Length: 342
View 1 (cartoon, rainbow, N blue to C red):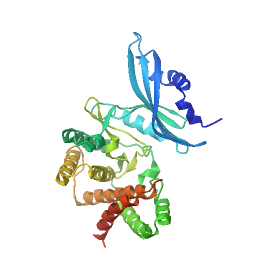
View 2 (view 1 turned 30 degrees about the horizontal axis):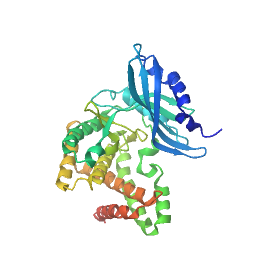
View 3 (view 1 turned 135 degrees about the horizontal axis):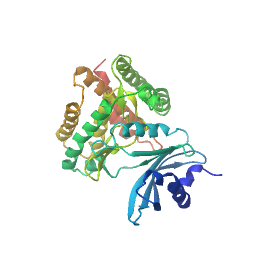
View 4 (view 1 turned 90 degrees about the vertical axis):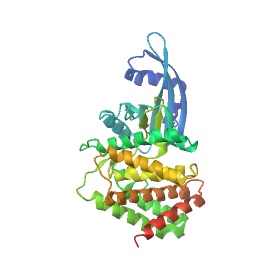
């Protein structure tokens, strides 16, 4: 029978499937003429898979005028992507379909492929502008990014809004505290005690807030420059909603600031400029937020900043072609941070 996901790479199957399933979402067109398939993520084994597929889909209207749109599918054989569809649908219905606060447009969830289909956003991500030192564009994107996150954190929540419960707490963010410590400890025994200390500290600090009566917010959960898109019309969109959950909004702030620091570290040599950009982000966030920056919130942001640092280090330690030399400076940073509390 073969792996079912391979059907999404078969031109004839996809054209027929899209004319049946996708075309009805675009009533301004009468037919899909052509689809070009490529895959930003293509992990396919004998029966399992984890893919993100882009379908450059050419539509025809009644006058045979052609329009090409990016349609995507995010699918995982072991993890239903229904939560991605639910997340996108909820946000779309709560004002995130506008030019000022944009996201991919949800289309439908396929139980057969365990994948969510959506219309993508077109443009370049923030990391592109960091990489090529396009400072003027960065200074346009950063305030709009801050406004986007402030809007997300102000969005009303419902009883069924925790779209990814495992992602709500540091302890259970996939693959989970115990598996991370176990794997790092097995490969790098000298780091095991440090990892246990660090995770216990981060979890305890987070629990102080999450166990309080303070309001939990919708949190993107993977806030970093590659998920921030400057669209072709100059607005900002955010992508990748696998991790959307209810949590402490400080998490998005700490994660974004750490990932900006990390991704810009080798590209922007002027550290003062990096500080300027982070201040621009925070200033615009709090201008558009109901929250105020105080010592308690700074502490929570720092907690997530250094948790994200250790997650970045973990990526380099246990990926298929490990790069422990890239993890070491990050580990030193976390150790320096934890030393302040001993």
